[in-house]
Image 1 (tube, rainbow, N blue to C red):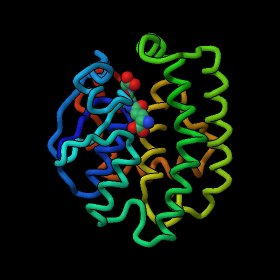
Image 2: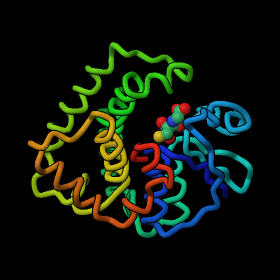
Image 3: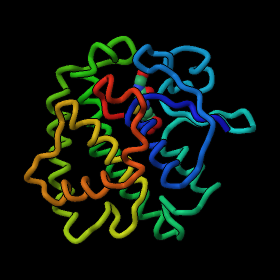
Image 4: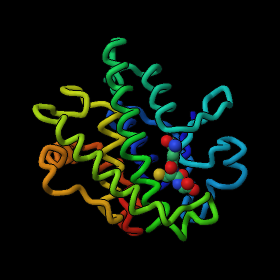
Length: 216
Ligand SMILES: N[C@@H](CCC(=O)N[C@@H](CS)C(=O)NCC(=O)O)C(=O)O
């Protein structure tokens, strides 16, 4: 296997997942600031053109972070980061969908259409006029999450899962890009600090993160 790795919150979530699992996979580094991920040979392997991707031993390349999480969880079930029963897996996937569709995707597009405009304008259709509204949706949904976090250690409850990894990496990135957690959301902030204390949170930061001032 070969992991295509780079700076960025999605590749970081992959590094955090691997650290939590205790798995090491050989990596090939791509420069996303120089758009190396947007041209061949990478796009021949992953036409989605985004990072990360996992090349399997059979030569197939899997893009999309959650698809890679699912594959690796099946290959390395312990410790479970999705779940060890059908009920646990369903609960995690329910939260992963809510977190991505209602929070992190809006946070990332809010960034791409505003602070990231220059970087993304030649890579995709960018809608600067949508950025403020997308950022507001993120805040609305974090407020909604706040109401559901009472008594919960992690997003699904007592288990640390990919839902925590995905949201943590997005919010840590967002905080440095004009989308901080509203301090009035005390349960969300306490959850964030809890995840931030895990060794995988620190070890997953890319070596160039501090230099480019991007938590990814
Ligand atoms: N839907 C993809 C999104 C991945 C993504 O947005 N990756 C970012 C890094 S965090 C990227 O490749 N950015 C550079 C670009 O889009 O050109 C996934 O979940 O893996």
